[in-house]
Amino acid sequence: MEQTKMNAACRESKNGAPPFEETQKADIKSMTMAELERFVTEELGEKKFRAKQIYEWMHVKLAGDFSSMTNISRDLRAKLEDRAALTVMTKVQCLISQIDGTRKYLFRLGDGNVIESVLMKYKHGNSVCISSQVGCRMGCRFCASTLDGLARNLTAGEMLSQIYEIQKDTGERVSNVVIMGSGEPLDNFEAVVRFIELVSDDRGLNISQRSITASTCGIVPKMYELADRDFQITLAISLHAVTDERRRELMPVANKYSIEEILKACRYYYSKNNRRLTFEYSLVKDVNDSPEDAKALAVLLAGLNCHINLIPVNPVKERHFKQSDADSVQKFKNNLEKYGKNVTIRREMGRDIQAACGQLRKSYMDKIQKEG
Ligand code: SAH
Image (cartoon, rainbow, N blue to C red; front, side, top):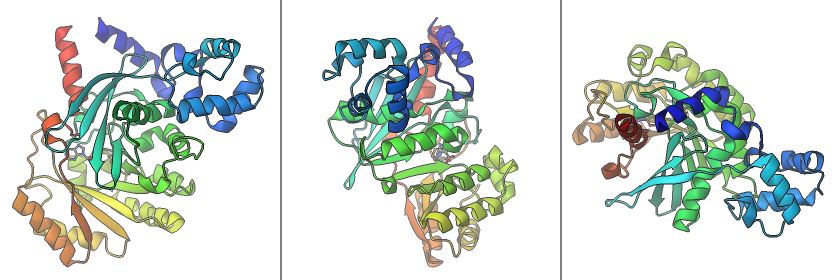
C-alpha cells in the first residue's frame, strides 16, 4: 500500500517539480527573499515587510508550520495555509554511531519518498551531509544510492529542511554542509544553486559559502556553469581512476566526459574563484590502488591546487567491490605525498550505522517492499 502511494508520487514529480499538493501551492521555502516579497505583495496582497517576517520564521526560527508564526495575523496565516506549502519532513529513523557520534537520519518527504542525511561531529564544528535527489541516475558501480535509479529531484526547500531538522533535533548549530549524500548535485543544478544561495544568505542560516562543498561525478558543462555563478564553495570531483578506460568500468558518466575534459573544467573553476579543489578517490582492492595508480594520479593532478581525499571503498552488499587493505591505503597516500600532493584518508564515520551513501535508505525501502 505504502509502496503504491510512493510510486504514484514518483510519477507525479518528474523533472524535479514539487510533488503532490505542493504543485497547487507555492513552495515558499525554496523562494529567495526577492521572490517571497513578490509573492507576498502580488499574490497575497500584503505589505512587503511581511515577507521578511515569514522568511525569518522559515529560515532562522525554523518554524514547522504556519500556526507557530505568532507575529503574523491570523488572517495572513490562513491565506498562507491556503496558498503556500511549507516543506516539512518527518524523522523516520535516527541511528547514532557508538564509535564517533555520527548520526544518520532517514526523513520522509511530503510525498512519501524517503531520503537520508548524515550529521558528523568534528572538532571544528558540526557538518551535515545532505542528499540532493531521491536516488540517483548516475549508476556508479560501487554506490548504493543509485541501485534503484532516480525517483525525483529534491527542491531547495527540501535540501534546507534536512539541515533545519537536524539542528532542531540536536539543538546544535550546523557550521558545514557537504552536498555528498544521495544524488548528483549537478544533475539537479537549479535547485542546488538556489539551495546554496539560501543557506548562505545572512538573513537565513548564514552558513559561509567557504564551509560548503559540492561533490560531482564530473558533469562537465554544469561544472562550467557552476564556476560562472562565482560562488565561494569548494568543488569536489569524484575521480576514482586515472585512465578513462578504468573510470568507465566504475562510473558510466565517464562514457560521456573524459578525465581531460574534467580537469580542464577544474582549471576553469579555479581560475574563476581561486578555491582549492578536492579530488575524491575511492580505493577498490586490485582495481585502482596500485603504486602505479598513485604515481599516475600525482602526474595527472600536477600543477593543480588541490587536495586528494582517499576513501577506502565502503562495501555494499549488492556489489562485489572489496576495500583496499589498510596497508595499501597508507602506501597509496605515502606515494602521493612523495610527489608533493596534499592527501587525507577519509575517516570512516559511523561504520556501525550504514553510513555509506544510500545504504540506510536502500535497506529501509527493501524492508517496506518485503512487507508489501
Ligand atoms: N554524486 C556525487 C556525490 C556522491 S557521494 C558524486 O559523484 O561526487 C560522495 C562520494 O562518495 C563520491 O565520491 C562517491 O563516488 C563516493 N562513494 C559512493 N559510494 C561509495 C562507497 N560505497 N564507497 C566509497 N565511496 C563511495
